Length: 200
Length: 200
Image (cartoon, rainbow over all chains, first blue to last red; front, side):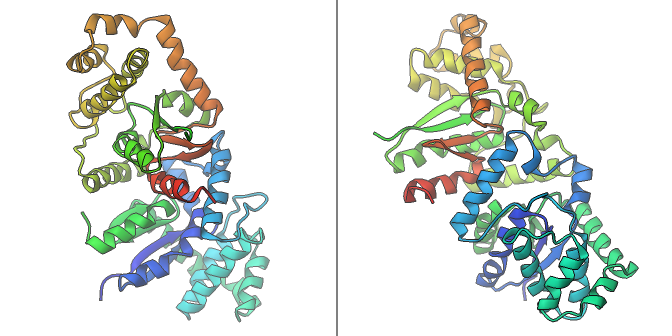
């Protein structure tokens, strides 16, 4: 069985949202699965001196246009939430708490959280909002709100994030295929070509 | 006759080098031409607060890998010249001087300058090197060395650069199709899809 494709993303990353709609089918076409790994891209930005493209002069206007254009092409609902980008500790921790008992539930939650953020513009960084999203999928809200304050869950997210940075992850989405790194939603066609050809 | 595709690039831009090998054929497939417009991307970087990706922590290592991988896929010779990035005023000015009398000669020079920089690793920012490259194609060296110090030629490059920034150009390569902006070599497939479909 070949290794899963590793899919690193931040819940506040619009290109991560787009990639989340493609990565599983892409992996499946090549007999793979995708291992979803939410992390805190802001920690990587601190190391590289980056900031979200949407906030930069000139680049920001282009980013807005490119995001809308990408969404139209993919026929996905999209908005840049008011106050973007939000710190998304809550959904990232909730993901790992859910994944501890049910990987499929964690992934369903990730999809729902991305939808709430980029289709509905809700602030998923608020623990209450994260709990509400998870509750719709069957998770008990009080248990979730407690879990995302647990040291073990906090540490798990920190370990994933630190490990990602150590491996050279500096943006979202970021994909590894058998150790080969690909940055960005706009590298997914190349990821597909890499899988098809076995690399070059 | 539809509008030419506008192709903005900096002579020190490796992704511009890659794009220069695709843009004409891409345009031709859709009954277009490409208008090559070298500019000084560093002036745009000052506005946006950007810096070359190759110099950033973590990102730099990825960039080197991505560039080599892209070159292998395209079967193009490639190296990141020692001391990269160089200021490329000399070839950019030489381009506009040549274009004043012969557009085809200017384009042939641009290809040769990109080859000298990214295949051979020569510092094309040096006026002597630029003159030597142009001389191989038939341009008189002394005339070129004089021309790139002329106020009119300097002003022309500045006008193109300022105009590009005003239109929202902040990186290299940067393409406009009927006013629609696309940033990056990795948007060329999307440019192609846009031309095929008439946009979305």
